[in-house]
Image 1 (tube, rainbow, N blue to C red):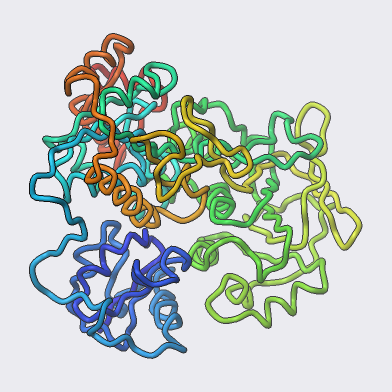
Image 2 (image 1 turned 135 degrees about the horizontal axis):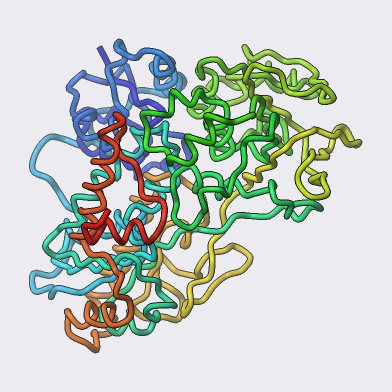
Length: 544
């Protein structure tokens, strides 16, 4: 029996470090790390020790002979990665032998404790905090503009991917670390300035992500039912900055989504999944109610290019193929589509479409009673049609245009970073200019995650990104290049309390967690989230 990694893989490489026979690739020191969809276990080398399964933070590694349902295909997916590769020797620079843990951080014996603020409590920020807390004696201040921690794990991961959300439990153990101080619901640039934050710490790491969405720049894009997929994801995840009534599913039989990346597939899947299958997740109460009364029966995914350039991962497409009661269709409107699918290399998304029905879809017909998802390649949105609201989308088709009737339009064409007050910003890339994570022109200021490298890479990619930034920070500290704090350690807490009486600390965060889990137990759910800032703050104070 061998083990296999499944679609919930977070690619953070925890499993790589514990494997005694070097059978999990790509490793962080290999060129493909962060570029592949996930990590893969080599069935030829695996010795069935189970160390990787014990170490996996999202419970994504399972015995191959016990995989069932959608997961059953992952034994072949893992093996396919090694089809044309020689087995890696259990020796050499990538070999991880059993023995005492080794740490890559090498600091002088007299290295004095430093105070580091981390702005943002999503994966990038928490990987940076974890690195500092495990490998140095630094004191860490966690700051987040929302009154609850989690970032992308809490508000970006689909509710039907509970395994991926499990990495949040790994991060949460650091929230109550004795060298951590937490200030949630505190916004840099509003409650405190970047200069004030820097004056209270030796260094500041910004892990603020990419909170904005990209726009298409087409007519009709601002109609009421034309919204960003990022807003839709936030809506079904109970993000406090998106109102419960922000999405109306009662009138749209067909939804058109611009994009075919993982976010596009996530929203398509949620829209057509039987609500009974979501009732046991942490989906927002208002979203579950809306889906139960939803008129949506068909979701059309638009891709500007062909099947071979589909932006989704194979794992996300596999999830669609195994969705109960949902038909998958490829609109065969373009003569290039069939050959691209049939000639696709094994393992990629296009090859997975070979057994999906292809037909030339007649858009003049209304969406049927059954639920289905339609892939329409070689189609770019040209205009959102409608007067007071969305009535359809005009798309390119073989040099001409086609009209797809629809009552809701979602654009899922990527995220974009926002400028942070007090920091330089590159408008073209939506990132903060840096060198190895060190912000250009600002001593003691660093970036990590999407605000550093742009909106690319999943949760696990942030571990390597954080390691680079923390390494740069520590090198600066050893070289004496960090500015000394102008105020004592507890002064920042006093400053925050004087500016924001609703700030939430670690004890308040624990109270929110207990309250949400308690709300969930009654309905057999992991938690029922509070969906507004006042509710979160009240729960932190013990008032529900």
